Image 1 (tube, rainbow over the protein chains, first blue to last red):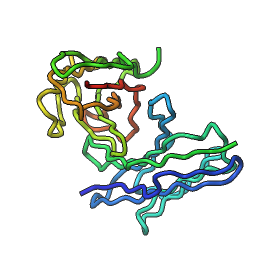
Image 2: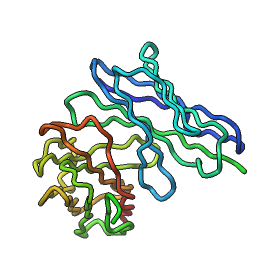
Image 3: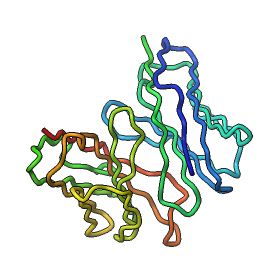
Length: 114
Length: 117
């Protein structure tokens, strides 16, 4: 069975602090894909990143960075120097090879206070 | 035109009403999805259409009836709903590769917030 766990329900930080959102996944597939999405109050889930299981390189995009570790089945997301506009619900998702099903975690609500 | 457009954005209906949610994608994708998002629950996959054929049906009650007339449009027909069906219904699309699931991401609409009285 496939599963995504986001243990942090809600995180509050003060602007300019760094924050890490945790994601732990379970799958028996050898090939799979991991995703992060951002859901602002408008409701639309906005794609942030995709990672393939065979590519463990970490990635940095501006203030965002992702740490993918197969050994611990984790795909954590760090926001550096957080801003109020980063306030949203963030979802981690998993999809196995050959399936249409994307399995989402329950999301982490991030509040960045001015 | 935004990538994935959903209408209406908000819908209030009684349990005996019949209504429909509409989704349209302008991305040239050929797979479309309905997800249900309830408070404090993971996103629940309801239906997937690939090349206008339903390929996933996740044990959804028959009071929800999907329709995919072409690769750009997806509907969710609603009838005799229950108050627990109140939720945000999200439509998404993706691009298929060689007729199978894409390795890429889903593109979501802003959702239709449904309230059943």
